[in-house]
Length: 284
Image 1 (tube, rainbow, N blue to C red):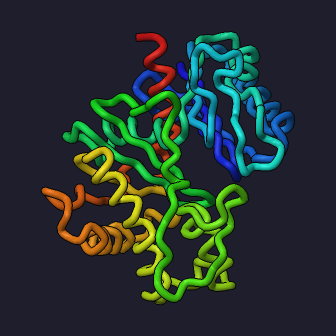
Image 2: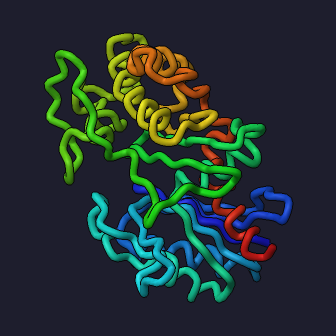
């Protein structure tokens, strides 16, 4: 049995998962302070009996340099109180089993490659658009990394004509996340985004910003497919809007045009299943 944690900026989802990757028991824990949130996860697993390995798919940035004493800690993050939180080491010590960690979008990209809408493609981009924007790439089922994991949600973007919203990223103000995450939509239009379903101007602007990320994917990594998840990314018409905007944004420069753009296939379970796959890999 595997222990899996999807650590999000709003809530943590902790679960026990069977060898066949079926969710056995799970709990949702609000992301408050590290002590409270991790303590609640520890208490949940203490009630579940023995597990064989732990996988964590977490919001970032994360320290993923294995030579660092801080490996698996949260790095400088917009989430108050979480910079330096020893996410991996604390949970591994509590459960006493092999454990490892990836970013939530890395884990989701691998899960989509193996089990979701990325099946049949060798290079799979995954983007989550919700409270923040995260993006990753899995190549043959392995997250792409340089000396660290990618942070494509914070790329600079060109403003859409007429958009005067200042941006809400505490680090960069008007980066992609600052301009196009779910809370940015609500602040720009001064309403709950859930009330904006019929507003083409809202979602066309959102697609125009996300298309700039697709351009970075296309010209920087040339993936086969880019999948969009998260509350905003899985809107019924969002993938089509992004695909159309990406053709215009690339301006016929890319040899084969933009990659295939679709909605993620595993829905809200992509990150958690990705965490379970990390645990599975530790026992292979």
